[in-house]
Image 1 (cartoon, rainbow, N blue to C red):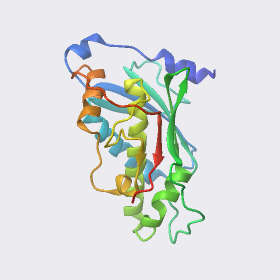
Image 2 (image 1 turned 90 degrees about the vertical axis):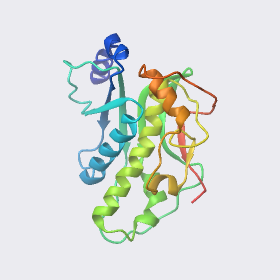
Image 3 (image 1 turned 120 degrees about the vertical axis):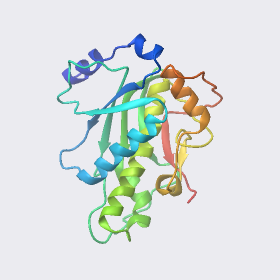
Image 4 (image 1 turned 30 degrees about the vertical axis):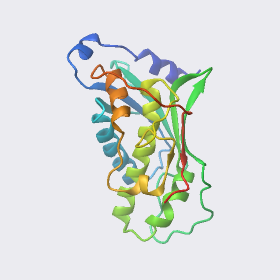
Length: 223
C-alpha cells in the first residue's frame, strides 16, 4: 500500500461531540485526477456534490491525496479517482460509439464484502452517455451540465462508502442505474430513505433500510 494511502487512513477519526450536537460531518474527498483535467467541469462537480451531500448532513472537504493535510481529522474519507478526460472538448462533438446499457459509470472498491473508501468515475463512459445531448450547448453551459452529471455519479459512490453497504435504493441518486435524464435534469437527489440512512450515519436520524444490490452505478437504457 502506498505511503499516501497509509497517510489517508491515519486521518480517520470519530468525534463523539459532533454526533451529539448534530453538526455536519466532515467528509474528506481526496481527488485523484490527471493535472490536465479540464478545470471548469471539475469545479462545477465540486459545488454540486457539496450541495447533494450537505442535504444528507455532510460537509465535503476537497484535498489532494498526494499531499494530504495530516494535521486534520475527518469522520469519513474517500479517495475519488477520475479516470479519463472528465469534460467535453470545445467545438463540435463526434460520438465514436455510444455507451452500452449497463456499462459502468462509476464504482467503489469492495473486498470480502466490505466497502472500501476508494471510488472511481469512468469519464469515458459518462462522456459517451451525455455527449450527444451536450454537443449543441454553449461551452460554459456544457461544462456546467457535465460537472453536475459527474457530481451525481460521485454522490452515488459516496453513498456506498458512507453507509458501508452495497445496497441500492429504488429511486434517486442511490438507485443502481442512471438515465441521461437523471444526469442532466434540473433536479436529481437522494430519496427520503437514502437520506435517512445517510443522516443516521451522521447521527441525525434513524435508518430505514429495504434495498439490495451492488456498489456500482450503471448506465440505464432509459432516456
